Length: 234
Image (cartoon, rainbow, N blue to C red; front, side):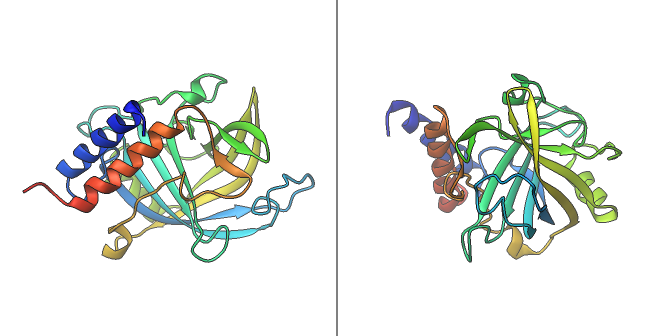
């Protein structure tokens, strides 16, 4: 690690340690179940997972980024784990943050008062079959506005499934990849314990995060895991 990486690791480790079992960022959230539907395509991506139609089980966590009071706008996060996307035990993790949809604003985290008021993007770029762009989730038209309170999001999903379009943006264009449906909350203790999303460890051939800030995020994720393993401070 260089100096910046070490700083990111230690800062995330300290924050996670102070919060006990909760992560350094996005400490308050709700776990949801769902599925990701990949359609048949006329044009191939040359990524085996994207080019194979089917449905995949998804575990999602919706959260508030900074943990501000519930009445304040906050950055919103939507983390996805696509189970066994590259075979048994090989998952795909995607971390999305509330953002804009424009060429530049898709890279900026935007605080939001509604969980369904706009898109969620990876902020940092991905390479998909050699193409450089950003992955984003867009609420489908007609989706009702929901408060950013995690309990409100969980209650809304329990009453009515929420659907999003997973797209890949390059330049000014967005190309659809899949359809995400969140269809219930998972309140079992086992689903909450030890659930840590990491898009750098859990990625697919031909679909991976890139960019100069990637090393800092890797260090921060490692620090957060180390702090959570250490448990709450005595």
